[in-house]
Length: 66
Image (cartoon, rainbow, N blue to C red):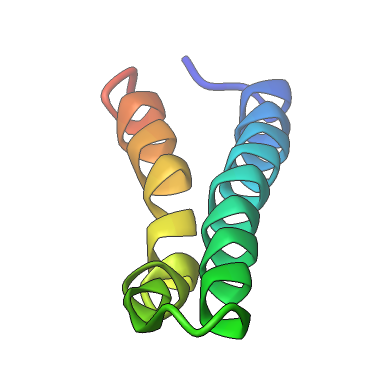
């Protein structure tokens, strides 16, 4: 059975991992773009959607426990 603490930890861990992954992709991509390397857009543009993937995977893992 899932309790309230599990849901809270899901939110915390999804937020932290999403911020780290998305932030690194955005930061590295922006640095490459500023330094005139256009392939930095390949990291910059999907940075926000990719940051949601860890939370989605953690939520699926938690939902399997029901």
